[in-house]
Every structure is written in structure tokens, then in C-alpha cells.
Amino acid sequence: MSRRSPQITRIYDKLTATFGSANPTTEEIDCALVAMELIAPLCEDDIAQKSYQLFRVVMQTPVSSAYSPEKKWEASRLTMHGTYEWDKFLPWVEDPQDILTFLDHHFDLATRGGQNHDEPIQNALRALAYASGPVTIEALKRFDPTEPPFVRGICYVFQNDKPFQLRKAALFLLLLIGDRWFNTPHLIMEPDQMRSLCVDWASAVDGIEHTYDVQKATLAVLFGMVNSSHWRSHIITEKWKLLEYFTSVPDDSASQEVHRQSVTDGRDHERGKPGGYGSLVGDLVVEV
Image (tube, one colour):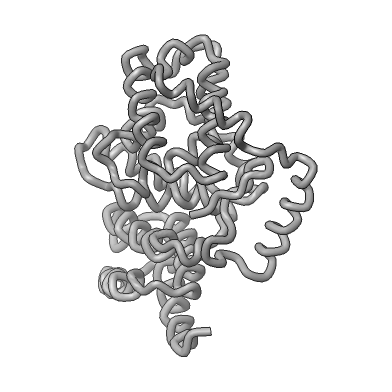
């Protein structure tokens, strides 16, 4: 435990009380934001976990004259930075709704407002793609990823000029939502947009080291495209060779239950161990 933990606890207790207050003053909110700007960049497990809990308070507290929408979103970005910016420790998502609301808002700012919000979008995608346990994955099934604003956002983050970590997180998120993207009776975007996304997805795959997890995620998404009459014709010709992963990725179905149990055990006592845990999809654990 960090020697600063008692001080950090007191700071976050004060921040939680401020943002959770029904009638905070403008001065209290402004001071809290300054404190968050100073503490959020510190890379510590304790800060990441407390930042996540504070993020939930920030998102649930109604806006007021002192707590304007602008200040609420600023506070949410700072807490998400403190929670999911670092690979060392990624707190498990307990409920995805607040993060999805955060993601939708910043997708809208980026795709309609022309603002650069790559970092907050990346943090939200990392949370959903790397730190979602079975409960959260089940909750995500009630979310509709085919809504036009969300579709525009996913297309945006796959663009070739986007940061590596942003595109990587999007690659694994697509694994979670792909069934509802590719298995739809109707088009969720225009054919030229589908073609562009396939090109950008292929570029993202090329830019990531093809570890076991990447191979499995890539193969799952590719199968989704292949099995879709809407998407099949837009697959980049040279990416059909990725089907070779079907034979190169071992069939470890017999060890799935053991693998699941090892992840669950690890989560109980050492969540966020470096290089250890992530989003459980079937038997897939995403290494970050």
C-alpha cells in the first residue's frame, strides 16, 4: 500500500462529499476540480479505484447552478483519466451505463462538434473492452450499439489517424458488440461507410501485434462479417487470409471452465494485476 494512501483516502472522501452534495457552492466545485487535476495524473492502484467510485458519483449527481453541465463533464473526464489511463491497474466496471453515457456524449462532441476527445473516448473504450466482467457483459446486451450516433463514433475511432491504444480498445469492443452489428436484418450504415470501416478495421489489425487474444478477437469479428450478407462483400480481399487463425488458434474449449475460474479468483483478490486481467468473452481474456 502506498504511504500516501491515508491522505488519498481523505482527499477522495472530500471530493465525494462535494460532488455528492445536493447544494454545493461554486467555490467548492471549482476547488474540487483543481484538486482532481492534480491527483488524477498520479499512477497508483488506489487512485484508480477511488477515481472509478468518484466517477460514478459525478455522473449520478444532478447538475445545478454551481454544478453546471460543463463542470460535470470536466469532472467526469478527470475521474476517467485517473481510472483508465494507465495499464497498471484497470478497476472492474460494476455498471456500464454511466460509462456508455459518457462515451455517447464524447462520441457526439467528436463526430458532430468536431472536437478532439480521443483521450476520454479511449478511456471509456478501455473500460468496456478490458475491464468488463460477466455481469457487465450481460448488461451490455441490453444496450443498442446500432443507434446512428454510436455507429458514427465507432467508425470515428477506427480511422487510420487515431492513436494506437484507441484503435486497439475499439478492436476489442467490436468483439463485444459485433453480433448485433453483423447479425442485423437491416443496414446500420451506408455501403460506402461499411467499406471504409472494413478498410480502417483491417488497418487497425495490421497495426497491432497478433497475440493469441488479438488473433481470437480478429477471427471472431471476421466470422461475423463473413456470415453477414451486408458485410461480406466489403471485406478487404487480403484480409480473408486471417481465416488461417482458425487453424493456428488452439481449441482450448476443454480448459474454458478452469480459465474462467482462474480469472474469477484473480479478480477477487488482485484486480488489475499488470498484464493479468481484462474482459472475459467466452474464454478470452484481453491482455492490455
